[in-house]
Length: 100
Image 1 (cartoon, helix red, strand yellow):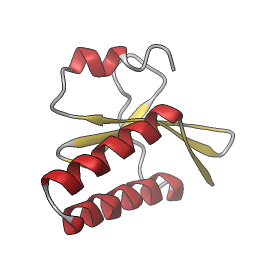
Image 2: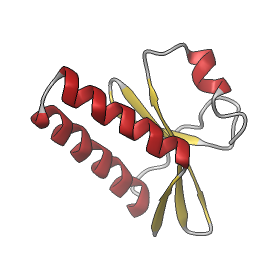
Image 3: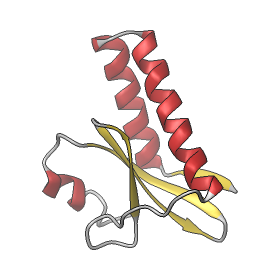
Image 4: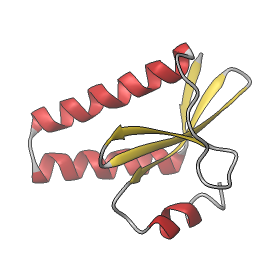
């Protein structure tokens, strides 16, 4: 199964990686990337079906307690829409998906 990241998801990932490197260290960034890869592999392998995100066509999976991956599957392609910060305003997170 192919995995595609939206521009917004790439931007989210870039911001998260920058933050982790500036605030923490390489090990924390490696741990985050490991968890992200693990989540994507679970989705690709079809090991579990994850909860719908609010009132959208998207599903969500918790990467860490700080970040949630928003995605959907279409034509055997995992489409990663956003990687949200869980401690942001939930309404802002939801609103950020309306135009995608």
